Length: 248
Image (cartoon, rainbow, N blue to C red; front, side, top):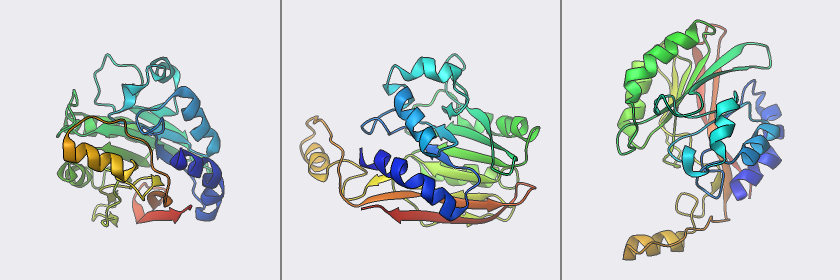
């Protein structure tokens, strides 16, 4: 798939160019747009991702279930059922040896999430802060309001709250007054000559007729999108910038 190929081919050089100490990738759409497999997770990690977060398509590929039971570098939303395999908080070492905590949450609005993210967010942050002040939250949510509200609620407690899921990069990268970086959506790595990655004619036909159709991944205008956050040793962000790199 074009987005995955872009990461595999460009991420190593891009990390060096940006002097990125840690790279976190949301990989829940890697397997033909829905879910992730162990093989594809390993490919992303080998390409330079330090840790992979997931979202509402976590369980779409059955083979990922036993993988998540063991993996410390691929996490799913922490507010899934307590009976679900996997973890929602993990630690990854930066290049300078600093531990970076990563928390994966999923929004409640329009998402059918078992546990509301606001019920568990601060408890997870407290747990992470016992080990490191550098904490990144991936808030995988449909509603802009939830992402903005969580970023405000955690301002001064975490390094960054990065929104994912809607595939459209937002124009609000910022550092909040308390020192927490935030962006409502980091965007989509993949083909932008599309309807959020799908061939436009297929999406339009589905929307016009209401008849189910097998979506196919588009190919044109491939970009890598994300956010670049800088912070101090105290975990307070000093900058937050949207990233957009044209690949083809």
